[in-house]
Image (tube, rainbow, N blue to C red):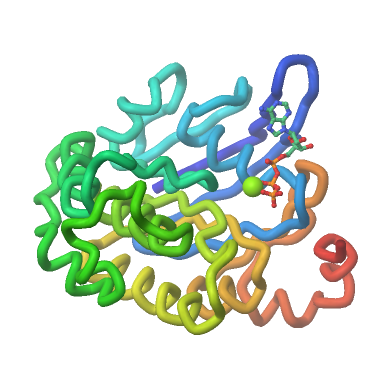
Length: 234
Ligand SMILES: Nc1ncnc2c1ncn2[C@@H]1O[C@H](COP(=O)(O)OP(=O)(O)OP(=O)(O)O)[C@@H](O)[C@H]1O
Ligand SMILES: [Mg+2]
């Protein structure tokens, strides 16, 4: 469904990603891991065309991704839940979710916002609270729910667990998977937490200084752990 082949990405003169080749099949869940500055966010932004300059071949649902703006990519069925959340502070939880539907994937049935809120029990009571009146963790959860509300074919989720309490991380992991299954969403997850990644994905990719250092399923990951560890160590 998503195919990247020999993708290079640049900020100005500096090349951040080198020869990235990877694919995400329909309904699959793939984790991209790597230490700080490895290029995880750059990869997700490259797919969305939200920052870096990109060279190489990318295709999504059999359509070449060339110059499409981020909003056009959203219409094709891509959604990015960015590191910095970008919740609308002056809108309520409900309104933030509702508005996400306007940019949603073309030709897909809308997600029912009330039904979606039931899947995130911590968000339900915050239905009418403005984004600016929520804690960082609550905003984070809302950002994830908003990604789902767009009902993409593929959700690009950038470090959803950062700064969350461990019990909430566990809940969020379950909610992400159940939403992906219920609404038919594939997942490309950028995550430092191997634990979170392992629980919720079937495929692992490790990047180190912008290059793919490992790719495989979790059994292969465990088998190569010694080799992989130095790419993940801080
Ligand atoms: N806007 C930018 N302009 C120039 N360089 C950038 C920009 N954003 C990121 N970089 C550089 O690109 C490299 C990869 O950064 P990126 O944010 O993709 O890493 P990351 O794996 O997401 O790290 P983290 O785990 O800290 O979020 C880093 O060296 C970073 O300094
Ligand atoms: Mg990042």
